Length: 327
Length: 276
Image 1 (cartoon, each protein chain N blue to C red):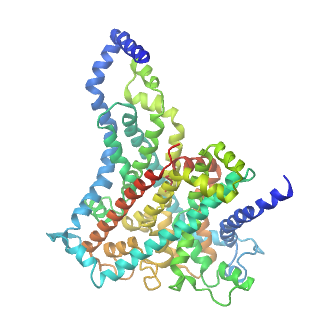
Image 2: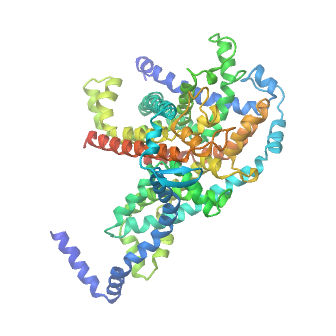
Image 3: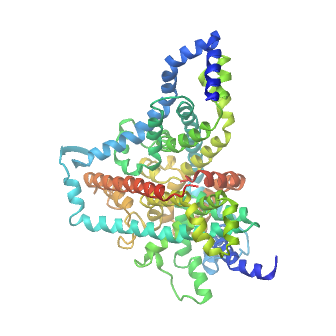
């Protein structure tokens, strides 16, 4: 209370000075004006090139389309077409690949990245150097990464040569054109590309846990693995939350690696097709078949994907927030 | 450290070294393949070249018009980063420093953009660009990138600016400084770490982007690096040496930046967790 009185008293004293009086009067009147003027450039660009196209895309999915021309209102017709033959096959296939991709990245990239981050946290030597090495591929364009791995995994490439030299494999390596392998290869390359992200986020998370918790666990005789599982993980929920949500958003936007390594059709035989490559084909046409587009279907697919990503993200953030341990 | 403790740590070191090898060997293969003929790459992809030749770089540079693509990428990235920093810092300033009833709502509107899957709006974005006559233009590309990167930049700037003491600009205000001068001469110099985080991650994202040039750019002379690379990975499939050289040329600028700024990038990712 005394503190409040002090502030009030200070305000009274200040408002007596003519200069301050002028400022507060001007402040009340022009505060909003000045704020709007500052926000306007960013808001205008953001609204014009992000919010407006997104809003009319969602609205447009309720209309019939002929080429790039919007025709009559058709309710949920486009959505209906998405769930029947022949489109449902592509749609459910692509959706399934995205789900597999998400699960694969959660295991191969994020769980493995958590272990790497924990190993780095326990050590003192070389840790910053190794963190920099692990993050290195993440600054490279997924297009370059995809092109590089396409050469390395091709027949005559480095991976084939290494496997053959080690006696683990014989003859031609054709994993990229083998439908039972291709998707897993792309997921592995995506994990190679972004492994540094969970490592850095988790490493920062571990550093924020107070030293006493680990000391107490050590005195209780907890081993390294139990220390991670029972003591550190519950404190790491904010970091796990941001890694999971980022993975979710990025997985359902997956496009570049598929396009560069397997083409926009998701070869072989749609085995690596994702929702965004399918969307791209519907909206802009496939290689060699430019012009065969279906804008209505593309917008319906976009709306479904939009709902999946936004609702999924919000639900995940809610769930993680509930699970967060309050220190 | 005694032997038992050392042995306990050994499996962990094996894992760390193994992943380091997995990261570095492909990049090593990329670098040495640039100096070898395709036949030599086939024969032994990981051996050092017997004769170091720069022919691959010359043919990559000449046949692929990479110089032009690099110039386009530099131009688009530089301008997009500059505009993003200026407009986002301006927007974040009142949202984090003024007492506005609608401030939080506006901030939320901006932050929603971090999550929005903007690629799904690309059909209508294409129509908009056509109406504005921004198709097949680097300026149009810059507009889209600035718009996409504003949410992340506003988020970072608002977080850093909120932590500053209120006296900072009040003193300047009493001296009669305008709001514009207060932002650019007093507040922004104090939040330079935020400026560098925004600059670095915007630059990486814009430099590496492939989706929007693929949709909006048709003319060869206006292609950015990732689009050009994707174009001739199919075309010259037999000349591996040249493709490796062009990959190396196109990732050299980002790699150079990373070597200089590795510490800032590491800390930026660790603290914000929003790199992509």
